[in-house]
Image (tube, rainbow, N blue to C red; front, side):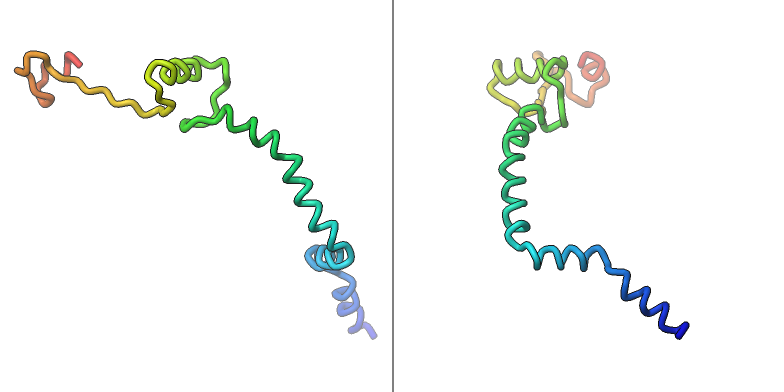
Length: 105
């Protein structure tokens, strides 16, 4: 009789996943409608969340980096954070591997 106690206690332990499965079987409409309602409720905040996102991460609206990004967008029509600057010697006598050229840059 003592040997039955461990097996009874194992039968009494119902996993969380098994309970969830039973709940889904008993109320299938709830588990169909609930995710749809949740998605509809979360659409407006999700749309607003993307306004502060940039390629470098989340930037507050009042930050200097965000203001510079807006000015770059207005001035050059680009919203990207990758900018390339080309340096050259106007006389053409200095090359990029020249020490004087590097110091001037």
